[in-house]
Amino acid sequence: MSDIIAADQLRLFIERIERLEEEKKGIADDIKDVYNEAKSNGFDIKTMRSIVRLRKMEKHHREEAEMLLETYKQALGIE
Image (tube, rainbow, N blue to C red; front, side, top):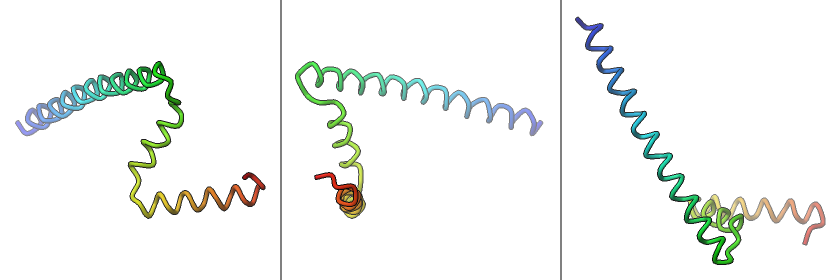
């Protein structure tokens, strides 16, 4: 009897994951559409993606990443 319950529970988990994967795909498609719309309005997508990535970071992590980038640029003579 417990094997049947475990199998039912497993099936429910798998079905939930499948639904969430479908939702994730839909959201990813929506995000792609927004980037394409921005691009058609003259915005640089690569830069926008960088800004989104930076805004996700905590302030101290962002500052650390910016300092490290600056250090690397200086070491390579890029300015």
